Image (cartoon, rainbow, N blue to C red; front, side):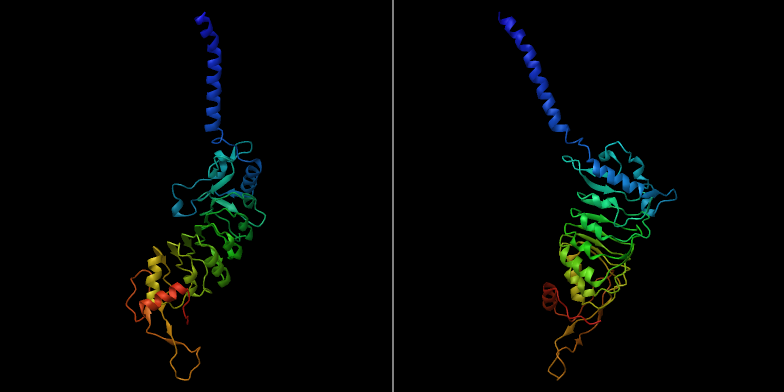
Amino acid sequence: MERFAWHNQVPGLFFLFFVFLFGYFQLNFSSSFHLCPPEQSSALLQFKNSTYVRNDRARSSFCLGISYPKTISWKEGTDCCSWDGVTCDNVTGNVIGLDLHCSKLEGTIDDTSTLFHLSHLQSLNLAFNYFSGSQISPEFLRLKELTYLNLCLSEFRGLLPQEISHMSKLTYLDLSNCFIKIEQKSFDLIASNLTKLSVLNLRLTDMSLIEPFSLLNLSSTITVLDLSGTGMRGVMSTEFSRLFKTRTKQLSAPELTQARLSKEPRNTGQSKNSQYTKKLTWFSSTKEPTSTDVKPARAKALLNKKMVDYKR
């Protein structure tokens, strides 16, 4: 009788076992293989169709050995989360990363680009491609979740839009080696709004209109700053340079060469706006600053206030 009862329980135990296995696999694997939303897949395919792949050599020596057209793997009817260069959120399937550097892409990215439909993007790397004639569109502002943006050597040109300064989550911004002109207002907004930046690379952009002391307003979170080849020229105190270099692990701005600080006018009957400059010293980012008669306490106070009496 007991043996008969045991045999009656076996099917039920097997059923419970399979229910457990089914639930386990659903819990652990369903999110991992979540298909990306169809509208995001469509946006990527439309972007692919707006570009074409060049068959010539790599865009840069940096791309040698790693350059290949990633968009070739993008096929309609397949999960975009499996495409080269695309990263999706494990839970929602939303596209959160797009890495197309060294992909030999040529085309134009304008205000109508479907790239800007990918509102969940956290990382976008378009470096070392051929987007000649493209301007950095104000539509980048729609990518509010971006923490990483790299457009290095991708042939963007024109004025940098002020809207870039509203991408407040950015920690990495590389616009280097592009034909971009940065105006004072745009730089001031970047300095005041992008408070999470760790890396800022503006190498070989046009910053000839930027006051050097605007650098004082940059976020204290910046550890890497490259302003070489920007045409940014002016005067800067040696003590300030030392403090700024201490705050940034890598400072590349060799055009900022001459150091000058004004001091308070004496009671000589001259206007309070008259400027008196102290001893000139020279600063190059490739050398350790030389000694100066600027008092460290005074320089620190100026740095903390983020204000320096500037004279070109």
